[in-house]
Length: 615
Ligand SMILES: Nc1nc2c(c(=O)[nH]1)N[C@H]1C(S)=C(S)[C@@H](COP(=O)(O)O)O[C@H]1N2
Ligand SMILES: [Mo]
Image 1: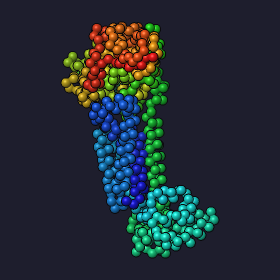
Image 2: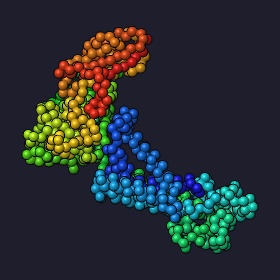
Image 3: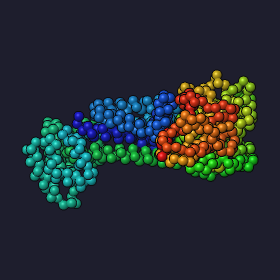
Image 4: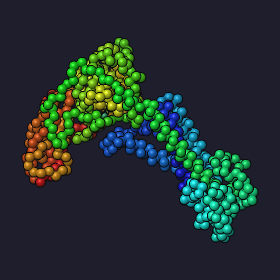
């Protein structure tokens, strides 16, 4: 296939134009109207559970980056194929881009309505235009020229073209030795020209040489060389400017045109396509984030004063042992789990919380409305249902916000309601038992985290925090809606995908130190970790070395039943290989189960264990 490499590059550039132009428009129409963002979000929504589990456990918090990487690779392959198949008279590649556009359009409309399709349509239009323009230029190239040469010639400056013309190796592209010699006399004078004249070289020196090449490889009976020479001289500067149309009138001078301008047309076209893609894409990203980024406004937010002084952290809740997880998790180390490929940027000024559904009176609360209400601050440990035994999808923070029982009471939930379906700006939902929000526990609409406004990726300006329930059924970030409803009427995001409708946190223990498969010194060893059973509390932790009897560990002080607790067991380690296990008993007296369970459908279970080599 002639010029395969050029065609593949043309296809990839066309795809870059699509994504770049769409990104630029998405700066105005919203980040989720960019086709890759919309497609990625749809992939996320439809990823089979097993795959999602695998992705989270394999890539952790970089699962989103991996998804974009995969989409990028697929895009490059498809686009390269589209480029390879496209011809001036064959629209196969354009059709492929069109099909991509159609799929993306359907997805984008499904997620954001008809108007959201604009970036995709214009982007795909621009991409197909670019593919057509580049393909025409490539089709105009003389057959024998190999793309490698096109590129080695690029040099891209006119000066480089000069050296190209004097390069006697070039005709080896397929012209015979005789032609080669015939050309030499022509190239010599060219090489002898003073440097200032180099600009004219492509026309003067090129034409005579190209005629044989063009004629022998191309259309022998088309326009004779002299005509081509003249027309070429007259037109080359403008024709190589890239405005040329592949119309039939242009064809004549084209076919007999020199390889050099044709080559330069291709390169110039590619440079333009690449430039448009890069400028539009990067510009769109920058402009989009300038327009929507809320980190500036967040930094200026003044948090409400809690009605009571902040809950002091008990001195004894922190054991201060090397390798042990600190009692409070700093915001920048707090795990992040959500389905949002683009972190929602929600301004507090446009934010509101609507409480509706099975209520006596629907209410809408704005940010300023909240200022008139009493704020509280509470320590609550948040955990993800996808946290494996020994995993780190759990964190403890100080949350500042408004009691949900008070906000719900203002709306007046009906007695036959049993669920609150909370919804975020990006359409994600959680179904929380109404009872968990009204039974007196510290369920809050949080606006602050560890003394700061909520970090944007943790839900700025407002999210839910409910002690005792996994995040997927309670901890809605960027929350704007609470619909009071019933479990038999509404199904939340993850429940629709096979996860349990109810998500109480299972009692758990983690061994932080020693680390697994470490070699440690014999003798006195601190085995330490954390344990949690939010809203039930912990009554004890035990440690087992190999198959010996379970021994009680020492627990740090109990800050509250809603937070995790540190624990430590002092061990006189003997040489050899040992397995350390731990288990907790919650405040109701129930010991966590040894039975291993997968995270789906309602959270992992089983004892954590660590294998160490002593001595
Ligand atoms: N809007 C939105 N809120 C969400 C989610 C989400 O995907 N979208 N994921 C939930 C899940 S599964 C968990 S475990 C917690 C995690 O909160 P964090 O990222 O602040 O740690 O957020 C919850 N809130
Ligand atoms: Mo989660």
